[in-house]
Amino acid sequence: MFGKYEVRNKLLIKKDMLEINISRIAENVFKYYRKYGDNRLSKKIVVKEVNLGIYPLPPLNQKYFISNTIYLRLKSTVTLSPKEKATVYFKAPIDIGVVLYKDNVNTIIDRVTLTREKYAIYGSIENGLICRFYITDVYHEEPEITMGEAVVKVEIDNVSNYFIELSKIVIPVAGINIFYKGERAHYGLFRVNIESPDSISIRYVKEVEIPGFYRTPITIGQFKEHLKMEWGVS
Image (cartoon, rainbow, N blue to C red; front, side):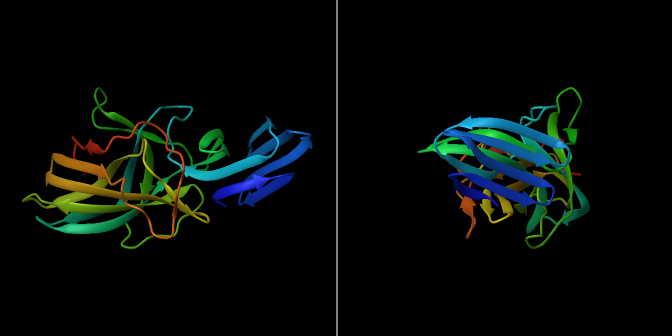
């Protein structure tokens, strides 16, 4: 489903409850129609031919809150002994973006949220972060995902002298690359460095590519390489 489409007269994409329909209704005029459950959108596009992209996007700037982070609550915790490393996988929400492109210019004309929007505050009410909230299990290999989800790969390095129990993680997703192949989406790689129970640094590794996947050609928001989890991970 993800990728580029050149539409001369019409295009119909159906997947589960999502339907995207584009059809020419006059010379240089197309009708765009999208349906997801009871949520529908219709608009007209004035153009000779439709060059369309459908891509996974980070779930930012929603109708309720503006958030640059995703708060992942883990169903089962991960306990790391001192000086231990681990590589794990999580699931996280994505949006589906519908994009018109010409040359190197991409313009988002529609954004579809396929998972229920939930938000939580990480930290104190006064100074905490408002995050998109999602519950995920912990996986030791890439999990199967559904529409509206993407894989998150995390390398954890506990350089502290403490046993650390990981029951939640906050990841920065503004400005990052997302990757796609067919109907699968991947957030790429995050590295978590634990120096103490109260000093945890999370870094998105922007230079990493996902073998066999394509990079989404647009990013959303201002990239921030590091995030400090000042209120711990348990």
